[in-house]
Image 1 (cartoon, chains in turn cyan, red):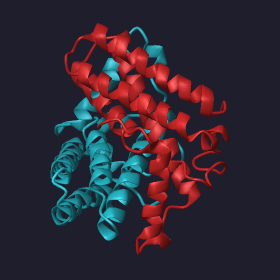
Image 2 (spheres, one colour):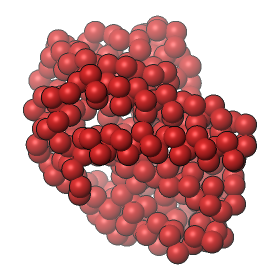
Image 3 (cartoon, chains in turn yellow, brown):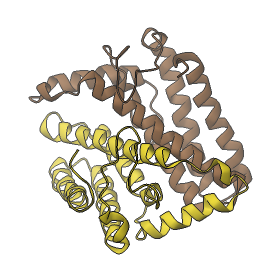
Image 4 (tube, helix red, strand yellow):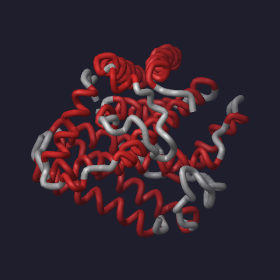
Length: 157
Length: 157
């Protein structure tokens, strides 16, 4: 999916969208949203691990494409909607590791989210070539976007 | 991603792929694989919920496309690789709910997996049209593939 540049605006819009339906009473609870975002990042971790295993060992083009497709889809999914106000603390699968800074810096979060989606889309594009050296280079760029966001907005586990 | 018809063969191949690298000692532990598969299905649940909310309330074409993209990417990701021998029991985020039948019926599992990927890809294709009635119809077909697999291979929580 294409880059989304305004994840926190999207979060607000999504909250309003849930609230605006006749099914507002079914809007997900904070603990469900936290569980979903923890799950989404675990799926990214699984697929990042698969790409790394391919780069370190025998390279399977098809598996790398599948992995990059999952990461790109999640990066472009509107993850900001899983970080609405009210989820600064709480427990999903485990206590959230998000920093309060995330909720106070929407523009910076939006930029980080856009960077993640941009590099993930580029990885998916490059993966289709089967050029493992190019994939390795782009995978490094993608991992930098993960790290920069973790450094700013995630507490150590 | 395109349909994968042999998820359990893929599982075996993936297990061999992990084992075959110089980094075999870093192969994921059973509890990690269980955590990843539980996460993947939670992400499917999140995005299925978003599609349902759009169908029941105000329809946002872009959000439905993003959701369908995530589901299709996960359906085509090779989920079978997260169900290798040795994960019949165990705890990821919680005790696994998989039935032993899954490990005894590879052909049936492969068919269920292929059905899931086929209907998810079709939903993504239809979502791009913005035709909410057609999306609703196809979403129903996708949900049937979820249910049939749950009925056969998942214990109640």
